[in-house]
Image (cartoon, rainbow, N blue to C red):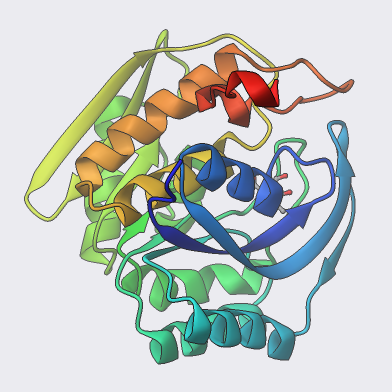
Length: 270
Ligand code: PXL
């Protein structure tokens, strides 16, 4: 297979392999692109929860981003876990230097089991700085609520809050509807003058660890290849839905999804 594009992932490591940078690398690779990384934090966790978080020193984060990109220029960047204000400001500074245009930011806040992945002070910096510097933000409902200090109880509320995010500076917003109490899944993309609603059947499963990370990486991979933002979201959602459907059911808690679902191994490699 010819490699389609290059994606730099700036995110935290999940030792259990289902979320974080591990899921990002698998996703980008499974969709045919080349994955590079800048690790922002190292978490020790399994499917039942997060045991500990170690934040990588900011100077090491900027070196990973800048030194790597200077040699192999990313076509797009995916950003995940940024655990504190120093890390956020460091990443912003490096992004300014490397000048990559296509950036997908997943404003990661809380892990599936409830552990905080970002401190409270950082929310303000995300809201006032970070969301303005990226092409797309992909909050789930709780994250969108925290960023806007609004409540979301319906599809209409998702649109209202999405509009508010645009108003406070986000360029494009994909609000993921998985937390809404409804039979169908609504993921809503708000671009400048266009709203797209992606409607899908909700897949009942507890094996959904890392779905957010995976989706934003899939979007970054598609977008890096030249697909439109809307097409990238549509295809990214399909990829995640398949990955949930074929989850391997590992672990005693919220298990991983199947990132490799898109791959067909050649006979000689089986
Ligand atoms: O799903 C959000 C997320 C992001 N990054 C890391 C994580 C998780 C969830 O567990 O571990 C490193």
